[in-house]
Amino acid sequence: MAHRSALDHLLGLIAESTWADVLMLRGSMLMPAWVGEHARLPGDLDWIVLSDGVTRPDDLAPWPFVQTIDPAQHWPEAVHGGARNQMWTFEEFETGGQRPRLPPEGLHWMSAEQLDEEGYTADFVRDLITASPRTADGVEFDLDAIFEAASVDYYSDDGEYGVVEPARGIRTMLQLPWITPDGEGGKVSIDVAYDEPVPEPPVLTAVPRAAGRSPVGLLTASRELSLAWKLHWLTADQTGQRLSAAKDLYDAVLLAELPGMRLPPHLHRFAVGGDLTPLALPGWSIDGDLPGGPEPWLARLAAALPDLTP
Image 1 (cartoon, rainbow, N blue to C red):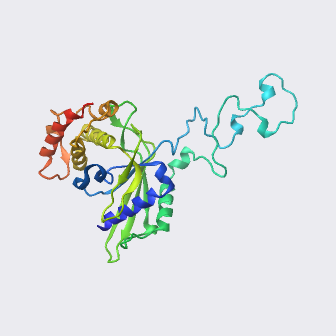
Image 2 (cartoon, rainbow, N blue to C red; image 1 turned 60 degrees about the horizontal axis):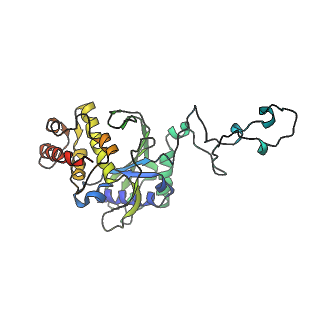
């Protein structure tokens, strides 16, 4: 229960921070909101930074994000053919129809290079924990031992729903060690994806916490998007590695069997395609343990797939 206490504490800290407006929760920590007590024990916190929160500049079209207005300005009389010596002030220069977007006063836009640097996510999380390093039941985080690693090798779509192939994207993974008053130790993982496409907007969800702790309101993936991602990952892993994760199969079955579960057309195209057919599922290889083995779970998913059609 110490691990869950640490997860719940971090979830609450992030929910009360400025990141709550730009992060979307998904994964095992969200599953209790959709399937209740049948959800498996959550292992980590899995987030996506929404594109409205962090925008990568396009080198070929850098507008409207600029640090100052002067790159968008021009000398009006020179442009209109009447150049002559004038004492123009900086503010009088026109922008020629461009609408540059400047950062708030005293701040600056982050460049792609800055965003790629390790440390940004860790610093923010470290600041949150510094203000509240201990849970109500005494689980304490070791701020000096936080470990961060960047990765570029997760599966995503390539912009065309239904096409499954690996795509490069930046993902930061944090390891946060904790210790209980009686010396038990462990660590919590936080996974933050910065540029993964999100097929539909997030929904506001009351995310349950354990041991009588109050739920927290967060932007999350919907239950439909959660299922679409699970099916997409199952297919991607089976296509690329001939082996899918048992945890993804478990979650997908529980979500697919929810009453009234239907995938809208764009999510259905994204999720159901390639090798994901009722006839193909019995031949899939599954990595990990499931109650009763993988066969009944594959059979349940095969039975649920036709009902997901919009």
